[in-house]
Length: 181
Image 1: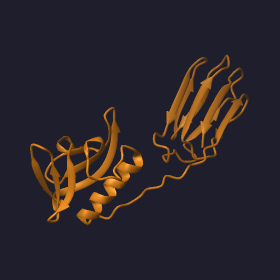
Image 2: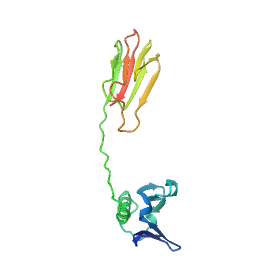
Image 3: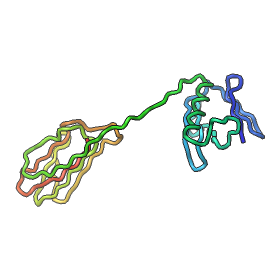
Image 4: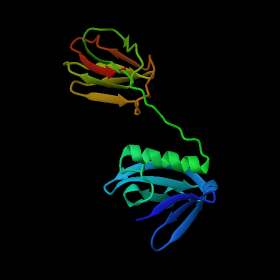
């Protein structure tokens, strides 16, 4: 078991075999994580990269009663150490983002724009003749049976209106288009 305290403006870690002191001004960042052993506080230092971080497993700490082996306890530990170090603690709230799925089956349509910001989109050529899509100004022929997909990545990323067009005016061409905006 270890004890973690704020002593002489330093983080003091004491176990039965050692005592370590860490100057707060050497801290680069404080966060928490969890793995198979449990929740732990991660302290990264200015002089070192993330491969040399300090990990303090909450199950090993005996003197901080509110630092329980839960996300609440880990958050409390981070907030306490940040307070000791004089670092502003910031809470981030991620608000849900509403996404709208759309499906279109197009046949016999001249060049048509996808009129929305798109998070992801797929075009599948389901007809008996070639269909055409246009991506950022470049025309691409989709042969029957071919499918292409695009994804903007992160939840807040998107491809703007006017990037994607489709054309199913050739007799026998058909596209099944799905996108999330």
